[in-house]
Amino acid sequence: MKRSWFVGGLIVSIGTIATLLAVMYLLPLDLTERSPVQPLAFSHKVHAGDNGIHCLYCHRYAPKSTVAGIPAVADCRSCHLFIAPDKPEVKKLIAYWDKGEGIPWIRVNNVPDHVYFPHMMHIRARIDCGICHGKVATMERISRTASLKMGWCLDCHRQHKASIDCWTCHL
Ligand code: HEC
Ligand code: HEC
Ligand code: HEC
Ligand code: HEC
Ligand code: HEC
Image (cartoon, rainbow, N blue to C red; front, side, top):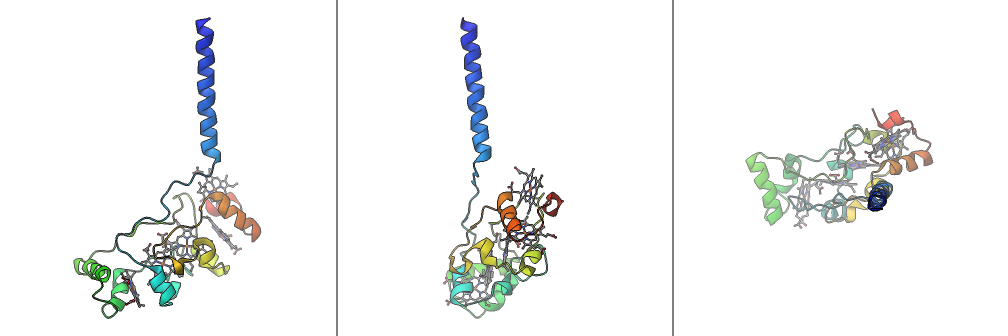
């Protein structure tokens, strides 16, 4: 009698754990930070929005490389030697330059190492940055707007009749 209670309990617990795991797998849980606090308060609204600086002025590799590229401190400095040099966050920027250090920006959009994502193929297919990255020119602090999950890639590839073969994205 005791033994059957024990077996019953065991089956119930295993069942519960299995269901929990299945639910965790099926739900598109997205627990990574979408808008982390950056080491320096760089505003896309001020640069790309208010002052109309083009995305490709800073992210200049996007049309020709897999990565879009983040501008180096030297690129920031070339404007900020003259523009707003007395603002505290700009002084912070010059301090990085003086120390010869890069700004340790926290990465916001990321796919795992086993996934191949080429920016240039998408720019050449005339997909606007905003379709994947949202209204960046209105963001004080950059925020990830897409899940970047496999289903997200596949949905759009199906729409555009782009390849959905596994080896397109998994090398
Ligand atoms: C004056 C230079 C500059 C301009 C112009 C600019 N960016 Fe950026 N961008 C940066 C810097 C610096 C970072 C890294 C710091 C941060 O995340 O805010 C960044 C980060 C990003 C990121 C997040 C990178 C990551 O870690 O995933 C995206 C997406 C992005 N920019 C898109 C755009 C788009 C779209 C435009 C045009 C609407 C644009 N940027 C215009 C300098 C610029
Ligand atoms: C093409 C010129 C240009 C480049 C390149 C540029 N900026 Fe700026 N930045 C501006 C302008 C214009 C303003 C607005 C100044 C103002 O409102 O007085 C500004 C404002 C700022 C501010 C002050 C925002 C505030 O109001 O407190 C910071 C901080 C800043 N930029 C950081 C950066 C960083 C970091 C980079 C490099 C990734 C960079 N900038 C590259 C033109 C530039
Ligand atoms: C089809 C969707 C898509 C489009 C269009 C797109 N991106 Fe991205 N972007 C991504 C994905 C996905 C990542 C993460 C890639 C990785 O981790 O390798 C990313 C990462 C980035 C990053 C951070 C790392 C890097 O590549 O340097 C920046 C900056 C960026 N994008 C800017 C841009 C800009 C600017 C444009 C438009 C010229 C653009 N992106 C167009 C999907 C897109
Ligand atoms: C908004 C639509 C859209 C999204 C989202 C998108 N793609 Fe694409 N992708 C395209 C289009 C359109 C092409 C171009 C197809 C062509 O030129 O034949 C393309 C091309 C590619 C190629 C090159 C295919 C080839 O035949 O060489 C790769 C690799 C790729 N995408 C990976 C990804 C990955 C990985 C993601 C998700 C992280 C993603 N894409 C998200 C629309 C998208
Ligand atoms: C258009 C791009 C694209 C194509 C095509 C694609 N994948 Fe993926 N795949 C991704 C991305 C992005 C991720 C990482 C994000 C995630 O886990 O959803 C991923 C993740 C995975 C993972 C790991 C899941 C995990 O938990 O990390 C497996 C396994 C996988 N893909 C298998 C496949 C198989 C099998 C095919 C072919 C039927 C395929 N993929 C086709 C983009 C793609």
